[in-house]
Length: 294
Length: 294
Image (tube, each protein chain N blue to C red):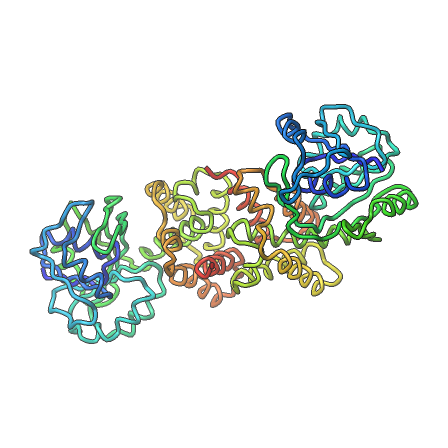
């Protein structure tokens, strides 16, 4: 396939490097400086990636004609891509990989007919503008949000490989909620207390805060199987125990975090349902404070 | 007067240095290593203090006969002084300078008849075992907890000087509550977010958390003039804006914090009254987690 990847952060770089073995990749970034870096070639785990199948450009350029778009920018950058999306044919399928659920409303406003959602379970760490580490081999779960089932299944058949697997999911909401719950607990707690993911499990006090935060999320989302959902959070935490969460990394590098997409979404849901969420509000305001720390 | 000072932390050292101008001081510390340091002489703001009026010993030694005891150890060390207190005559007045209010029950168990409480509003920073900085000239508020009013007023007359002032307070509970509220807000928030006291006022997000924390404390304590009480917290925060709170400093030096005496006390009060305190519990568990951080 010809695959367009929008966004050259850790996920964009990882997908470009891994998918370029079997597909022709068009990789887009925002900044010209990064484009110059990318043109020197991408490094995956310190090794140069063959660039024969990878073309690079910025999102100011005209989008190439491709068979699939993969959107790997942070949720808060989606709006700035309006003009770029405007130039993409309405029938080209688009796969969105954002965290949180705040972007679902936005997807409804697009003219594009075939929309897929994805949840990335790979560990990826951007070392520089052209260098990415695949810190944890995982998978990408994908689900149909809107459009033809046949197109979706066909794309899956073409993109899935055992080395870089894509898993079909029936229910996009359930899939996103699972990731959202894990992100809403692991990200702010690790960022506020400045610990690796694993310390939330090892330190009995932080583990209590995980539970208390989960209980509040459960009040908001009314999950069908809360036990199973909390076990899933523990599993992710255990699997990524040596990692720093993206929110902790963002704060350390004075970057905007995804707090709005994650806890911000839960606070809006809570308000709709009239649920009081003192802890989630504390986490939200606390992370905002840290983003604005001198 | 002859004054015994128990505890050679920042407050004990500051009081020994400042009161030794007019009184004979017996200063007690816990550790033999610190005793050896103290015997080389105390430094106040980098300058040697005349040691003619200061004798040093450890709390393992027999207490001298003095006219007033000043207890300047952390609340959580009070219990370990039982044997030392046992050797102090029951009519010698004792002034307790601990933060929080958890020690009031303990005071009721002592055989001593003249008990005073104090709240220190000086800025003091211990640089080493024998060196203290007076970072903010303030005052010490004192109130009678039990015993003869005449003894209390007499001690005040002897100890107060314009250079190192002591202010008489009528109501020990009101005096302690004021400090407790300020400590309960400023200490955990600055410690968790690792900011100086002033940033709680300057960063609008942290300021919102100050307010939310205060509202929960108000639900527990049912203060008579909440507005005035919150203004008092702001005033203290402003006055100490360049300081790191003692809790932040304790965590940085991997020392036990006073969270138990401060938020622990409020949680117990909340439980007695059946008030739910999600934020205070979060702060309490969070600080405990940081104390136990790898």
